[in-house]
Length: 294
Length: 254
Ligand SMILES: Cc1cc2nc3c(=O)[nH]c(=O)nc-3n(C[C@H](O)[C@H](O)[C@H](O)COP(=O)(O)OP(=O)(O)OC[C@H]3O[C@@H](n4cnc5c(N)ncnc54)[C@H](O)[C@@H]3O)c2cc1C
Image (cartoon, rainbow over all chains, first blue to last red):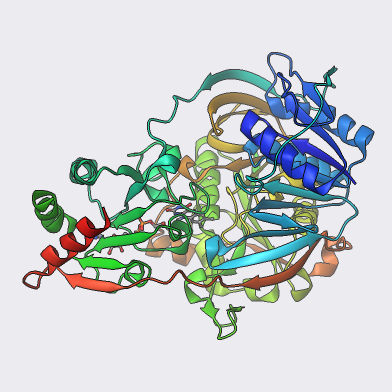
């Protein structure tokens, strides 16, 4: 078995290469710019010339793919690599299975309808392409050589022009490391009302995250603060959802919490069926009282 | 400029029932437009309003997608025309098959310069149809797009990735997948819904789209996960002492 790993970040390069090692006896890692040592048999680095977005490395990645002729391609689920892997799969008559949470004997497990279901699937094509969620191979140990080679950039048929690029500011909180997590939902009527949630977090020593709509239609939170199937999947001791309805897409991100709480003004909100303790009440009314008691 | 927006119509997850053996039953679910495709429709409509472009929505799926309410819903959102392939031969397509069906329809629509896709479908959220479609058409593509500006034979887009923000110019024709924050879907008025009923709809059968490739992915099983065991104790803040009891439970967990 030969495995090819596409990764952008070093942690993913390590984890996916380690995972690949459990599946294959030959592991090649392709990454941008700087090689990662000791994780694969062969590390190939691609440097994209200035003025191109990194997606323009498609032809270069494809050349490595053709050279390696892998049986399985493990991909870090980033926007760029979903494009590069997806286009290579298309050329090979294959389809990428995305965001696998488990992978064994070629069978990938991923969420369906945001966690309403769990789906198992495998490639019906000779080569398996799969993007792998972080943590899937957390227990695998990477091993490999320091052999690294830089390949020449292959110009794409239709090059794109990178006009500007900047790093996003680093995340202010790390919800994945927090033992206690509070999620604010659309039940918060105005940004100012979030002060109540912040006070609450301070009282109980929690970090504040949110549901996805609060990062989109409302831009009250940075994108990396939203919890759920397309955001963060957490493992906290305590979860408190405030003004959160309890849609699966959000709840799959916190359903591993040891103890969970919810505050919602609607007695019939679905979240009350998914937590240990619920309080039916209006945020504006109950949260100041709760804060006063803590 | 001619803009085509790709729209997935699928069962409303609110109506999906978990059966006794933990399978999912969507047979009673009404068809809806996949959530984030509404944002893609809005982005297409706003760009068209800005540039005078014509817009076509393209849908491919099983016979159940041919639903008059859904068709009106799509056409009441600032979209000029609808092309729809509704055929049970197009049920349960993987990303590759979907892209092939859509590519055939984009080609038949003739003169499309820009294809806009949503961020990901509500069922699989694989974020693969845009790239597979671009490859099938032989066009460049970009995802994560948060703003689009039309140029002369080009579009310049802003996009947000995991840790970076970029501005990129693509020559047309091209495929874009837009992030939901690009535009908030409009609430269509009565007038828009009435006008939608008069807009042109072209229906296709699977046979009109050329031979569909065999499935590239084999689905083994779909089941509802066992829900986590929870106490489900509900306190009512309007009742004396219940807020205190909730706070006591909270303190007990800290
Ligand atoms: C493909 C896809 C992926 C998605 N991924 C995610 C994801 O990863 N994470 C995520 O969060 N969402 C995700 N979503 C969106 C998700 O489906 C829900 O729309 C979202 O989680 C709902 O957020 P909410 O609970 O804050 O808002 P709502 O559903 O609008 O709920 C608001 C709740 O607040 C209550 N409320 C209102 N006013 C008050 C008040 N004054 N006091 C107390 N309670 C009040 C209401 O009763 C209601 O229950 C995804 C959707 C799709 C289609």
